[in-house]
Image (cartoon, rainbow, N blue to C red):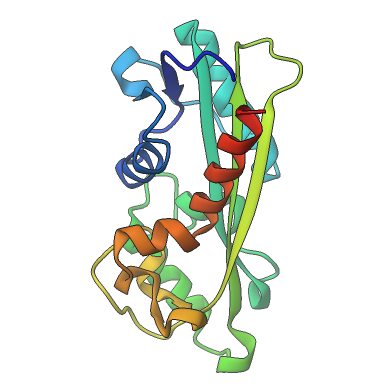
Amino acid sequence: MTNTNQIVLASGNAGKIKEIQTILHDYAIRPQYEFNIPEAEETGSTFVENAIVKARNAAEYSGLAAIADDSGLVVDALNGAPGVISARYSGLQATDEQNLQKLLVDMQAFPDAQRTARFICVIVFMRHALDPFPIISQASWEGTILTEKQGENGFSYDPIFWVPSENCSSAQLAASRKNQLSHRGQALRQFADLNDR
């Protein structure tokens, strides 16, 4: 098992930080803002590329091992959008609410049968900035896009992501249940399993 005395989490997103620290409770995860690490420029065209960029940036600035999550919502009817730009779907400084509202507008013309979507998460762990063999895990969570918000929990697109197996939106799930089912929960458990080998 890799030394996990301290791992820098390459994210400033409060929702992600909380979820990751909860799921990886056996690890000493510290968000990168505690080290005054600047945000990496997400120049990749895939979730894997962006996660590597973010993990390497955090490891380089901190001198510590780093973990990064790159995740987003992929909607079939929109040819995979918002995809890797999920956090900035309606602009660089967009809020979760602005992104969500833009997606609702963009999906107005589509009937229920064409509203399939999935959350994607890629986790990258780098032991140091020059790590040639990072641990990479990835997972998806299938659902559909609602026509209006339901639920108060979660963040990002959770209020409009319908989870058929639970008969509710992601934002209506208890945090513990969401962490069992979600793309991020699945990918983080994969990482922990790979790291323990």
